[in-house]
Length: 226
Image (cartoon, rainbow, N blue to C red; front, side, top):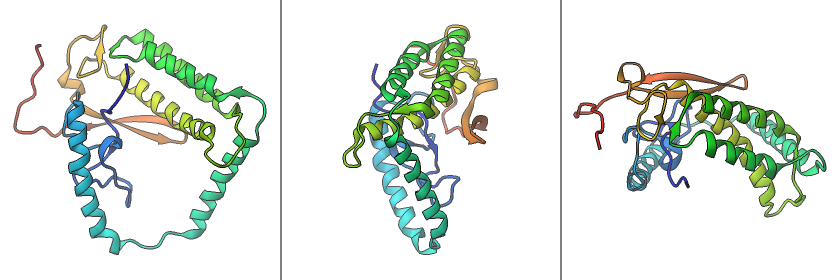
């Protein structure tokens, strides 16, 4: 199955603002929490248009209040990224990037589809964590600095592993079935314990989960029976 839209993303408000000052998110990368646990593809397109417009207006309104960034900190961050990229391009041995990418694809397909079960997810999460430990030793064949798609894929892989680990941990901790998360070992929805948003944070290199209450609209929550 292919994923053409996401449920979840960067926590954002109706104007696109996020908990990080100056960072705005809208559309596929954002989660405004207006669609519940099972967003339809057409709704994702509408969300991009509506909240993209609101975010653009909010950014324009607040630009005048922003201070210039600390250029020393910006240049230091840029230097770290350049060093990381140069190291990756210059590495000629280790484990090929595409091998880890394919193993990640297989793990997520086999252990974290729509239908899920505890032991299978534990096995899948262990696989993802092992892949993350192997990531620093990857190398790529293309050593160029222009249109280097192998480099792009390698950099993307780091983010994919972070997201995969977060998704896996969140699914494992949510002991219920809801939306597109259907567990064979917890087949019913549990509003008493899990009518919450799963919030994930990266702290000291580890994924930490917290939960935030759901703001309900005018219609009461009820289980789908079809």
